[in-house]
Length: 280
Image 1 (tube, rainbow, N blue to C red):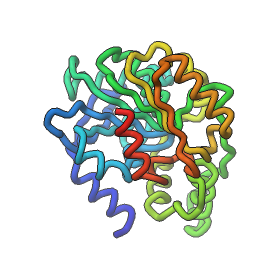
Image 2: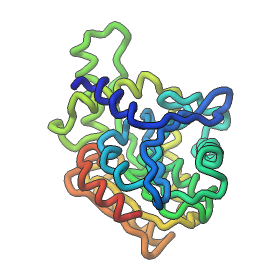
Image 3: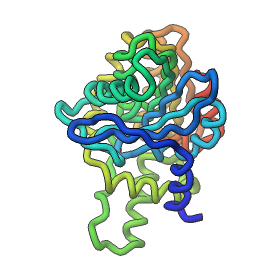
């Protein structure tokens, strides 16, 4: 099956919702409603969309009431109105949660990369309603965050082979630990996400907004990183992140997945799902 067909088929198994976002709408996907299950919301990374979770949705939807969305300024959602910050994005998402799930509904939350920054702010704003928070390859740790140098996006009309080579090189530099895990689905998802992105999340990712928010988070806290995450800076800075987690919550879980890159939930989906569910 072609990647576009694969994503379309998966998406067809969800219920589509929307909530206000500036002058437009925030696009949501409800994958399942498991009786007695606290809703689990997954926030994708920068220059991404719901499809950052494509490898995880089929398994997680069997076990949890599962929701994803395209965050403001990304995917098929409307642009993020000023001010452009993770805090403002979280405010818009929380209003959507209140509208679609109910203003008193508790939930669990997982966020990836820039989405983890937003998830941290969302957990602060939601207070005790957010029961568990899992931060995956999270940005927002100031000087601990490594800004990976990438090739310029392909130009319109550039030969298809060159376009593919650029996307593959950028995925290898930023998202994956090895070339072997870069498949056609990952390339298609990355290219389609990049073409729709209107929010420069990379600038926001360099701030220390998440590190500063950790002590205010009431949810039970967990972290998951790949040991070869290009944004992490290696084992010493991963251990500094662990210390920040445990300063905020002494019993916080912190997992480092050996040999895995930034997009850990795609590169090692089975192992990642087990760690995610353990954190919940």
